Amino acid sequence: MIKGRIIEVHRTNYTVFTEQGEFVATVRGVFHEEGDFPKVGDYVSLELLDDEKAVIETVEERSSVIKRKSADGEGEQIIAANVDIVFIVMGLDGDFNVNRLERYLLLVQQSGVKPVVVLNKSDLLKPKSEQIAEVEAAAGEVKVLVVSATNGDGMNEFTELITNETTAVLLGSSGAGKSTITNWLLEEDRQAVKEIREDDSRGRHTTTSRHLFFLPQGGFLIDTPGMRELGVLENDADDEQIVFDKIEEFSNRCKFSNCDHEKSVGCAVLAAIESGGISDRELNNYHKLIREREFHEAKGSHAAAQYRVQNEKRQSQQIAAAQRQRLSRGLR
Ligand SMILES: Nc1nc2c(ncn2[C@@H]2O[C@H](COP(=O)(O)OP(=O)(O)O)[C@@H](O)[C@H]2O)c(=O)[nH]1
Ligand SMILES: [Mg+2]
Ligand SMILES: [Zn+2]
Image 1 (cartoon, rainbow, N blue to C red):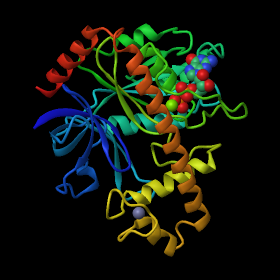
Image 2: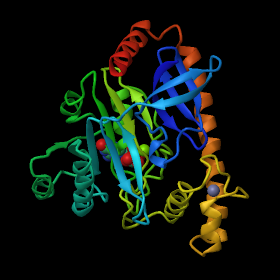
Image 3: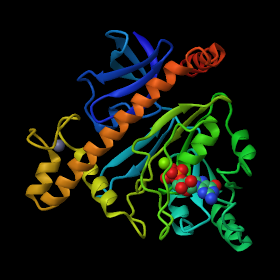
C-alpha cells in the first residue's frame, strides 16, 4: 500500500499522483456517502495493480474542504479537499459583480479557509478606483489583489501567497481568467483557455474538470471549471452549461458512481426524467456534451503524453525530486 494525492476525479475513476508516478485508480466498495468518495486534493492510500492501475483503499481525514450546496439546496458537493487558501477570481470586465463575489466570500469563509480576492484583467480596463473601492468594502479584512494574468502585472504578490506546502484553489465564474492564471503560475500552457464571447465576457467552459497541479515554484494549485459553484445561477448563463450542471447534480445521487444514466438501476437522472425534473431533450444534450468532452479530454491527454515523451530528457530530475519531497512531506 502506498500513499498518493488525488489530482483529478473522472466519472468512473481517479488520477492519483504518487512517488511512483501517476496512476488511474478505482475505489473499493467501502465508500457509501457521496462525501466519502475521494475528491481532488485528498490524500489516499492505494494498492497498486500494475504500473498504471491502482485501487484506492482509504481516504485520509481532510484538514479542510471547500463545498457548495447542490442546486436543489439539499445536498452538498465537495469541490476540493485539504485546501489552505482560495483565490476568488473576478474579471474587471463584464464578469464584475460584487454580489456574486460576496457569495463566494461567504462560501469560502464558511469552509474555514483563507480567501483572497483577485481582480483580474487589469490590463483591459483602467481599473476604476470606484470598482476597487467597492470590492475592498465587500472584502473587509480579506486581501484584494489587482492583477493581469496575461501580462503578469501584480502576479508576484499572488505567488508570494503560495509556499511549498500550500494547496491553493481558484474559484470564480467561467471567463474570469482562472486557467490563464494557472498557466502563468505553471509557466506553460497546460490549461486550455478559450476565446471569450464578446457580448458577455464569458469564457466557454474550456476547463471541464477540477485538476490539481504541482507548481514549479512549490505548492499545489487546483483549477476549477467555471461552473455555477454556488448553485446560484448567474446572469447571461450558458443554457448548455446549466443543463449540464443540473444533470450532474442529479447524477451525484445515482446509486452507482459509474452510472451510465441510460438503463442502470437506481439512476437518479432517469428518475428525474420520470418525474419531469429533466426533459428527454436535456438528457440527449447532456450525453452529447459528455461525449464531446471525453473526446477533448482524450485528445488533451494524448497531446500531454507526447509532450511528456519529448520532454523526458529535458525535464530536470530536480523538479521531480522536489515534487516527491513536497508530496511526502504533505503525506507525512
Ligand atoms: N485582457 C485579459 N484577458 C484575460 C486575462 N486573463 C484571462 N483573459 C482572457 O479571458 C478569457 C477566459 O480566460 P480563462 O482563463 O479561460 O478563464 P476561466 O474560465 O476562468 O478559466 C480568455 O480569453 C483569456 O485570454 C487578463 O488578465 N487580461
Ligand atoms: Mg478555465
Ligand atoms: Zn444515473
